[in-house]
Figure (tube, rainbow, N blue to C red):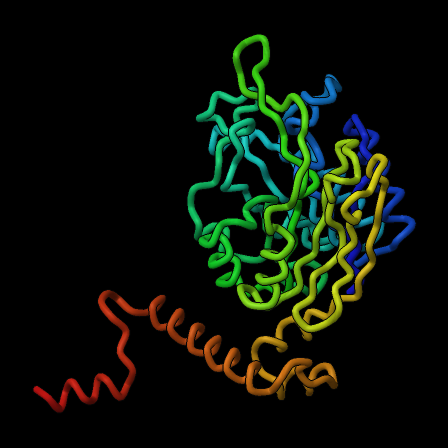
Length: 338
């Protein structure tokens, strides 16, 4: 499966962003193209004073994206700020679009910074998703199951647990701006919180947390894409994939880089079967891909056993009425003791 991630050229209108995406799909011919979060709408419209909408109706962004997906027979995962008429809220949302099936999944951001959050009286007034279970799921696209991580949710243990339960083939980490860039918050003329500038420093362990999650939390590749925001390279936008079983393709400017962020694409070949069976069954992995696990058999064996137990407990808990789940042997022992 050909997966293309990106740091897009900074564009300032919906039409320009759609044209850029069209050209990128035509050039790279992916099976799945991954944009950053908030590719359409959001606080960058205020920051750049574009006059473009801060948010959209879902159909106004989904319909043209689905047309592109059908035209190039590819999946597209993209981010936008949406006005949800059912929730009557503004949401930070990721859509996963399959060329044949249309939208196969939507995911709303849970961890919102103050300059986005409605409760912090932000100018954009986005409401967060509050139910972890809604993030513990995946979406189908071109034969793979994917799930979503928004930006600094990288620091949420609960969300990593949800993504592990989603049991997707790989994770899309869709990032608002570079991981070493820190927005400075101010207020507009009506006293509402907004982004007024940026500072820069270290990533605080962000990259290390992604690498750890790929190896242990989700045991799956993590594909990264980041907006440019015309920031300097020292803000370190991420693009490419962190693999738990192969060499990473992650690309980002090294420390000390100068100049403004440039457009970037990383092309990866990701085998959903390899993703799936690398954490489930070494014999099935070999049967499906012709490969054996790349790490020690002992380490993988322990992981497989534990993950099989997790799936069993989850299935039992789903079907159990109430109370603790007992194995067949435990139930027999209790009955004998009566």
